[in-house]
Length: 144
Image (cartoon, rainbow, N blue to C red; front, side, top):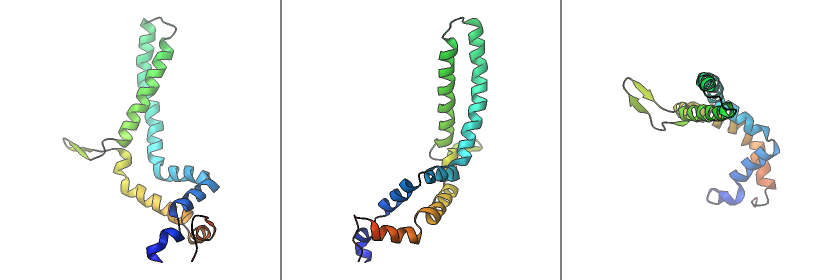
């Protein structure tokens, strides 16, 4: 049976079926694993946007163009999101910078995220009841 497990149970189909039955589970998983990064993205957007908005305001005072605020808003929004995402995911490998060690926020929490992710999957997606249901009802598998 162990040598033939793929014909009895398809993990991929089981997970996809669970996620498609209740699509809110993916949002719950993201919030459990990435809440700290989402909070950082929100807060950094506020502060970066404020600082860059001051620069945009100064430019608008001296450059009287009706498109300056629209173009400035595009640049501020893009720069804010780009910078926040860089801080969340880069650098991938820990990098020493003097007395500091720099690494992306999400990657620095890799063990914590892995624990949250596996707990969610063990308790919500790959429960014994759902696995048995998948074994018995998945048309791609053949129960013994």
